[in-house]
Image 1 (cartoon, rainbow, N blue to C red):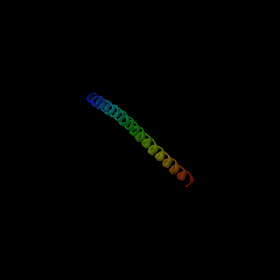
Image 2 (spheres, rainbow, N blue to C red):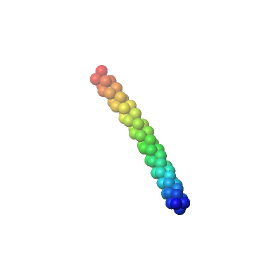
Image 3 (tube, rainbow, N blue to C red):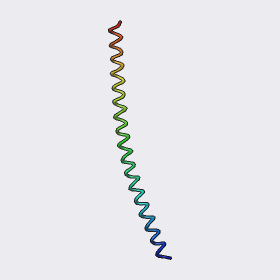
Length: 63
């Protein structure tokens, strides 16, 4: 009985470590995704600025 309890405790500890490793990997992935999102948002802002400048140029040409 004691051996089964010790074995179960070891199994639980191994599972906890595996979950902690998975969590660390997920946090790293999330950080990368957040960095990528920030870059995309910057690119979008630049594209919107460029589009606004093109619209302003068209208004000047027409005016």
